[in-house]
Image 1 (spheres, helix red, strand yellow):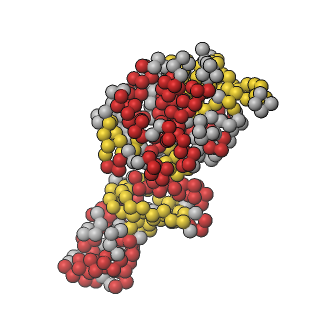
Image 2 (cartoon, rainbow, N blue to C red):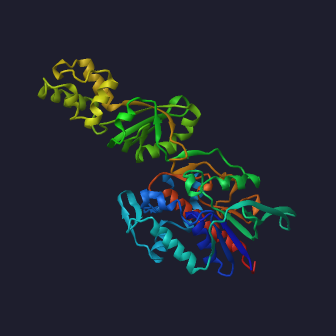
Image 3 (spheres, rainbow, N blue to C red):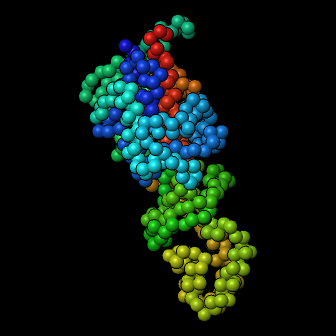
Length: 431
């Protein structure tokens, strides 16, 4: 009996095993997971609710990926968001679509997504082995009559316990190095390099920023809605990230959907330059002229009030005093003493509150890893390594990543499904 081994019991690994066994029922499929349970990272996604995919039209999908989006074309063509939703609901977990086309289980419990995938694995009699960590992978030479030369192919894996398992195909779906506590410790990158494949530089993505500003501890927990974040990046800051959304101040910087998205785009530049100039537009819907008129109206109505009290009509109360201090204007200044220059300073600050990004919170808080096994090493039509027959990669271990909203999980499911399908076809008994 031919056998396929899948390393990694996360989203990509589970779907790869399901796909392989569905495609080739006569083949033995073994799923190896180092943790005590499958889908450990799934349990913490979406704040424990699991934003499993995004229901956006598939013809728009590639717009939501940062690194090598075109590489995903075949994977999405074979297994898309609707296919995934059908599979999960077919195995007992009902889904719902929320704002931004985000898809969640109706129960709001991430465990129900894993439960559905476990159900599918059980139905197919996939051999799931928990607490089984792979130590090394072995390839061997074989005669390739088509090329008239010797090629490499995968032949076995050895576990940390010393057990050697032969296989006809191997799928590596070990994730990245974000959320190390879930078992994502970069094993797949080591395996790839040991086998002679290139791994691109790794950096945290979808991660909070660390700022140089002294005011951030005073603003910790303050949420801002409908603000625009501007970040200058690239050579000499000639590029600009500019997007409207939500963000929150942390003890050391800023986070929230807007910031996580920015980190995916400017992360490489931040790593290279060490710091990036940025600003927040607190009033993106209002022009500077309109804002100045509004400020004058507030002044006229509150001539004898402290400026810090007046600013509450324009900013969250916790932000007002911090803002004035940043602008170099006394918080107890009476509104009637506000000069024209001070008004300009306030308006400019409201439209472009300066901040400096000096780093990120790193892999411990990153949702995904940017970088990975180079897509130049992998066939996008099968997820098979070009240099080694029978070796496949899927999910976050690859140099592909997207924005928040369910897109990274869909990436994992689609590449996992294609890898499983391709491996199963490769080892068909009658080939």
